[in-house]
Length: 257
Image (cartoon, rainbow, N blue to C red):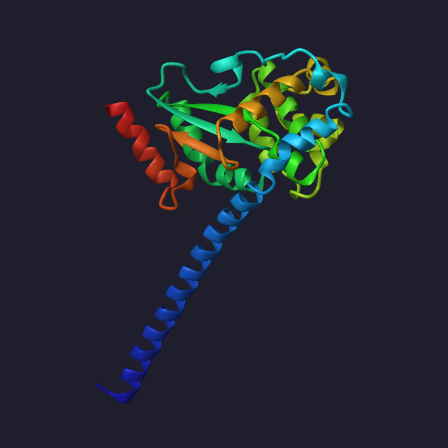
């Protein structure tokens, strides 16, 4: 073999090695981003009760009013918003906060798979809405967004509006979702949602007390942060080996069983 050929092969191997290292670094950054976001959504959990209590008198009177569950809410105390068929053999339980960056990371990565499985009738997702970041960083964006999502559920548009909120999630430190006008504006991205009834529900904080009750259930459950994603009683989001493909396989196996 000529010296030129040897040099060419050696160069090719070096390029391949460099590319592999780049791929490993990219994957490491991706996982670090998700894990880092998860940490942010855990901070201050113990302080949430105090913050909510301190702010309880400052929020709209509706937050201290009667608990009004959104239409179709199910489960204990009607705190779960279901997406998918009731008869699905597999159930995924998701505790989430619309201000939480880790929740957005989960939704971005898993949304196509969740849509595919729920549309096929193989999976039912039960969403529980909490206001963890309001307690961590102050503000009311988690509460306001959760109330608006519950209002969307009243209109039969929860999943679409849920996705729009994550697609337009502001920076965690930016309490943009505290503005009802912004939430109503985003409803314009969902066909048929921006109606007088929806606007009134958002402005009145119709489901504020329901969101607060859901958050108390989150605390009582002893969960460490958002998102908490339960399948078969286990938090699969905490499993570093979990992928959309692996989740799909688990759901398919549950349906075969």
